[in-house]
Length: 284
Image (cartoon, rainbow, N blue to C red):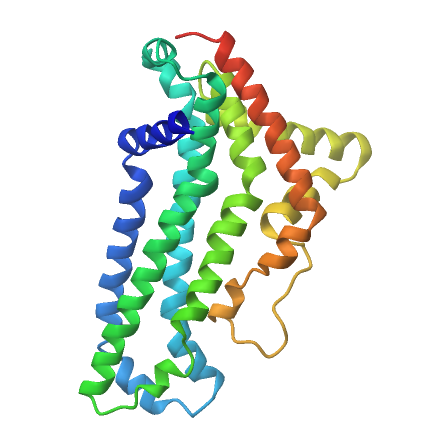
């Protein structure tokens, strides 16, 4: 466990984008909020009480902030996973790290923990902190303009915001997306050139061959359902287009889903393959 802890610390030292990217995204969101606050009091005064328009005005900035940081987290996780094992072979640092008393299993697990756990938690903290600052600053602006703070606080709860963000970032983008990150790590351990190309070609090839040979799209639908949701999924009737509820992920149902455990089993197989490849592969 001590080796695993220091291996994770090493990843944080060597990949500052893990925490810098969410911080930069949070800064961009707050700049956008400052520009939007100019019109916020007037828009709230014009909106009818308990109307969908009022929900849109109060929720959209917070939903947008969450989506921006989630997108940043996903992009950083994908590119980190692609470079995690490929990069140490490319720059020959694998020769040094293999001389250390750290097993290939510990190294692969530490690298897998970054996109599956560390980065989602870091992004979760950054998202909640950003939305808290947004709520406090917006409250100050409303109070300065003589408006009731209930216009915001009746629709937005920090506890509810934290729960929604935790479920979507840590449970969904972290644990549910584990097969994607494990696959990218496997490719990163195998590819000698262009890992992104080798990561995308096999799924595309399977989709094309299935379509041509059997005129079906089961594999494509499987990928879409697991990572993006069911193709026919639609928001509940009457719900505004962008509210915090649209990001709600039922963590209890997620943990009991057979698809989650099948995905984790597939992830374990991919990570085992990555560990074996790292053991036999040397520097480029």
